[in-house]
Amino acid sequence: MKDPDPHSLRALGRGLDLLPGFAVLALPFAFALWTLGAPGDGSAAEIETSWWFRGYVALLLYTPAMALFWIAGRLAQRWDLPWVAVVLRVLRWALFLLVFGPLLLFLAATFVPPLARLVV
Image 1 (cartoon, rainbow, N blue to C red):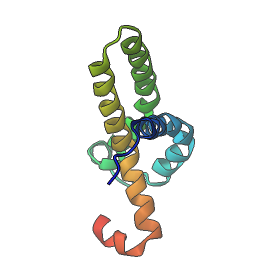
Image 2: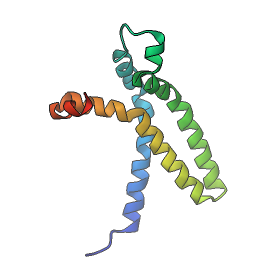
Image 3: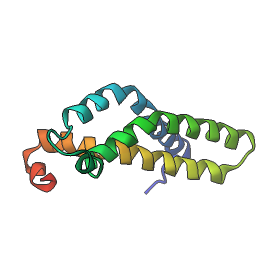
Image 4: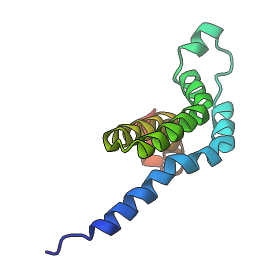
């Protein structure tokens, strides 16, 4: 079997790295989904301990964190620190999954009924 071309793998990696950045464009829709999922009659203490509130706070902090990751990535490139770039890539994806993972799971459970049993 022929080994994959490393240039095409790098291009795929660069393309996948754009996804967390493009997710910034989805923030208004994500904000609307989090708002629609707001707990109705809970007390303030119950709301603050809910998964919804934690996700809401993570969503609000997503754009500033992505800006910091972008600045740190540019500095890592300028100073030729490839290991810092790898750490930043992992952290950027972890933040993306933390913020958008529950939303993606919610949407998947909404449109694919067998997944709803896993969520509930």
